[in-house]
Length: 306
Length: 239
View 1 (tube, each protein chain N blue to C red):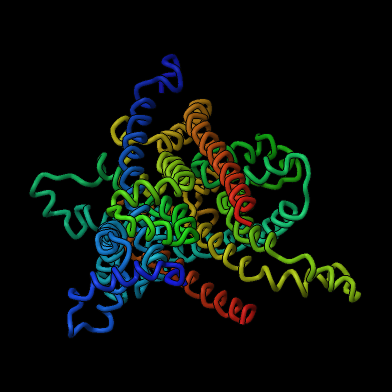
View 2 (view 1 turned 90 degrees about the horizontal axis):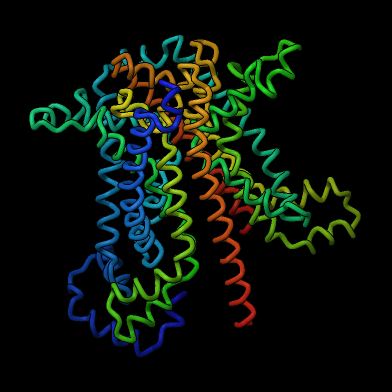
């Protein structure tokens, strides 16, 4: 694509430069690397440096975790991860993360719609504020939400007379997860909505489609891949969220204890084998969600764009 | 906590501020160099396994920080791969300041890359090719052509990385050992104060972090408007 616009002379020059360096017995793989070096310098140092750094900071720790988990016998591993308290944390984490993601999809699409389709005073402020959860430390979010939603807090006291518990219960945990993963759906859906050609909607409307039909049959299929992409990121983030949730959850085993916290507790109690087993489960779950959602998204995208 | 010293300006909190800033001061430059170098390799060249590499770089965003902390312990901790060897040589990389610095770097490693990559990709390689064909060397091309084009995305990426580095909590909680005044960062100090029911103190420390987050947001908004303006100006000129 880019070579089209490169001056002929330059291509000739670089070909001449590289010609003697090309080994005659180069494998296809190697020559692919060589060809990409033709014009711009710095490929091998930057890629090499990236791979080295990644190996040190990501692959090495994850390998160490896998080795530690593999040290356990299968029976021990199973015992650790199927422990009643651990299973309760999976249920609690999954329930609140799924609920939070559901809220985020609905709220996110709604807000993305408003931000792209309407011009109103304060629109830019709201647009800017969407990213706040990315910049605000999760511990600060957790602290503020816990204080607001506590039974004597500003919002919590409105619900207290009806005996509805927000903080130290599921609603509070879901709120914390919604807050920390809120930008994902908005930010993935927004550009797709902005790119959507209004003529298609107009055509549908002229042909007699009701607004609901236009949304379901025209707009929704177009934004679905983006919604799923955002939902994936939000779900994975919520499953792994720690900072915001520990402040608000109350952290009672079997009731409001999330898996991340149980791992933390196991480390604090020097039960490293349990921590390794549980961390493997959390890591595996996150990777599984990423792979499954990416596959679905790829299929949808192909169906949409042929 | 001794309120008579003030909630912010007491020794424990100031030490936490110092540690947090130290962690960010290492993590941000390291990840800026890493992010730009990785984005250069990914955006400017074609090679097999590029998508896999990109997913791998962005992986820390999807892994629970607790898992990152635990995995770190299994490399450098006593029960880890290299723990005993390091211990014999008198190097202590867990429950210490270096541990906080290193996990903060790991957790925030994708942030500059993520902000810089889309822009680098959309800008293509033509300007760089022109510079090289006119005789510029690699560094000249990077500093005079690529970097000025990236400036604003880079500034936002760096500020996001800084904000996240200051606010990192989960992974740091695992590896720091949370010794009061010893290895306590600002977010850990907030939790400590919250658990001690010193609400005012917790909010005082939180407000420092919140102001930094707001500055980051303001910067981002400003950068985006600048970019939008530059974009529409370029569009008017070309079309």
